[in-house]
Length: 360
Image (tube, rainbow, N blue to C red; front, top):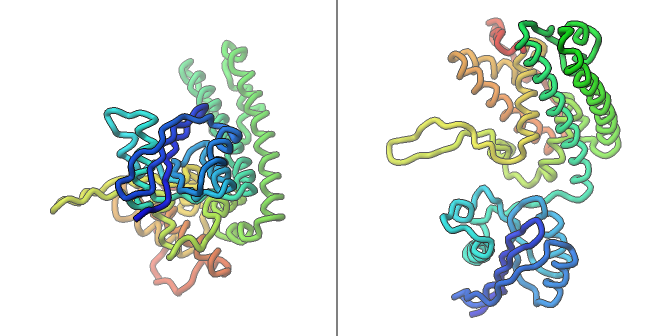
């Protein structure tokens, strides 16, 4: 009995290690080599070989490498690195060994690789705009924290304000005289960053209106704006990939980890799998929904009831639960084509619980 040859490629920034297994059940190593991690290097290596299965790990180069592999007539499996502990936790880890493990796991059962599907090139370009904007927001936050921290170390405090207004005259005037030389340039830079973020917001609004009408519908949910709706659409890419809407929670890492053994079943933190940016945006939306400006909705009332069950820990769990339920709601709206309905059924007469902890 023979099967198709299978190759594992451990992708590096400049060089990649390759291991090719034969087409027999014994899967003997037929070839071990190194190739340049360039389009030309891959095309040269793949072009002179019969069709086979190629296994790579998801990473910086995996999207364009998988496209080259398909163009050359080979099948490709993109492995989820989070599920390959046998590679990154080995005591004797080498690139050649990693390539061989990828090939052997792909030979035994491709499902063990938890294969990843890459986005289209167009979606990837739009997602790059979102990530660039997020990088600017993170830079602004670090600069603001630095300015506040330095002023505080001199016995003064700057007034509370949003990141969008931090660079205005009120903050500049309250910086101590002896710190103006050091901090005024940073405040000016925060103003420049705010201008760039506004330009990105305008670009995102235009892209949503032109190419992603579903994202416009998702914005009818309180707290969901162009950034979150577009990040959701670009990250999910294809809503039919989930058998049930609730499957999106584990996909985004918003469900607790499990470590059950015998009678022990400890309560653990969320897995934090999937896209970091989208998970962060959904949590921010959950804070808004549970805050004083969240508006009346079944989702808000459900989250506040969860938060009432305990102290600080329960409030944090409620935020994560609302973020998870929000993801399920957005996917359900996408799949069904229905509009958002804030309140679907008659509530009991008791007043809605108030939770001042979510005011910020």
